[in-house]
Image 1 (tube, rainbow, N blue to C red):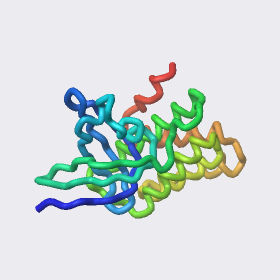
Image 2 (cartoon, one colour):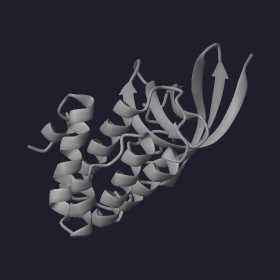
Image 3 (cartoon, one colour):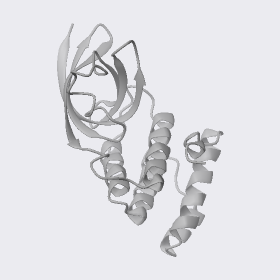
Image 4 (spheres, helix red, strand yellow):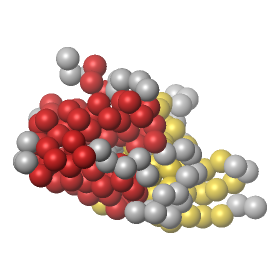
Length: 186
């Protein structure tokens, strides 16, 4: 049985598929993390290429058929690349996207995750590091990992740089692996 799905989504991963196709991973409000194929999106004639950039919040129509999702239309709601960004902002975006991709399984829906992720993207976009850390703490709590008192204390002391180090170390201890996004800008 086939059906159409209209949804908001955050582009959290993309891979080039064939010549002009792109495999997109979206975080959606009601369906969680889903993958869809954007046929011909790499083509020069495609209007979807700019919409399907990492970190963009989009509205999309997805056709579901035989266990496969196809993106038929997409419109950017909040573009990540609308203004020039610092390397720190790009690093935070890739760090966040890597975290989401590791913590949320495909087709897994976690209540409130889309809103927290949307707020995280907006805080990176507006270069609001304090709000980013607050949302990151909320994300960890919402995922059910709890938040160590050391993280809460450094956040309350407005020591945001130290707090971010503790959060990153805590997440790496959970996933038992260092983040790959750290290697991008070193």
